Length: 274
Ligand code: ADP
Image (tube, rainbow, N blue to C red; front, side):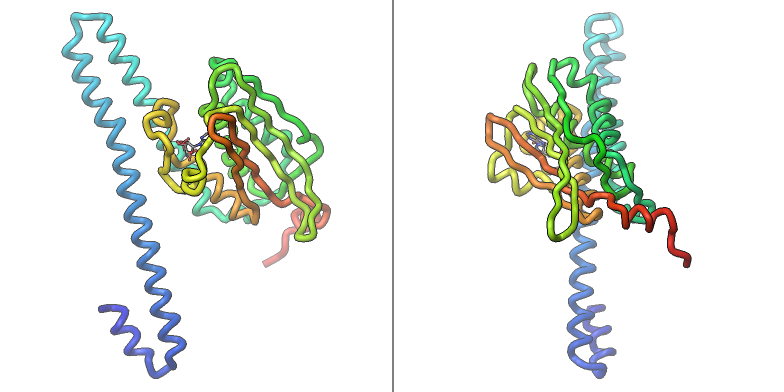
């Protein structure tokens, strides 16, 4: 109704303009639908652990005479609380990567620092599973971008590699500089010997809240937002994230990002005046 009324008003200006306007409204409606879905998904994802916490706290009160049961319920409460915390953290990350212009405070970022930070982030989890982490090639490489967002992206990839791998396997992080016609860039590849991803799922894992196995993902504190964040960060930096995987053998996620070069560094040192 509204679209038609607006179209009628501008019709004399020419049909091309009307067409543009209608397309614009369609796009606006599509964005609105995506937003509604997203809010529904978030609400559902938040309700699950909150509901569990509320049931468990009742169970704890009922079981106050039975210390063993109390301990068991408290343990599960801790798992749900951790899950809630990581979900909220990822929502904050997602809103940050979607709202901030990453290139506004872009700077040369050392790849070895990003790699060290990512490894630190899942050192504990890797330790419990006796997963070996090996990194190579990152020395002297620098990417151009927003440090916080890049750290979130690489951190998510390494976290997934650890989460979706069995005990006593290896996670490798290899960085290299690629000099291509379209501009120099850096590739950071995260390789695991984990469960792998089927061709069918490969197309969907970058969608928000998509999880191949929700039960397994939940058990490891997964939210289904990690790869959506990685994809967003890569794209907003003019890069890309790709996946190679064979079921039962493992996966390699490759993050391609612009390399920080001399020209970019100079531009950074002398910010343009408004
Ligand atoms: P989650 O929080 O569930 O890990 P992600 O967005 O990070 O969400 O990943 C989406 C899904 O992709 C995961 O639930 C998992 O099924 C699959 N996945 C991601 N990384 C890997 C990996 N390295 N190996 C196997 N499966 C993976």
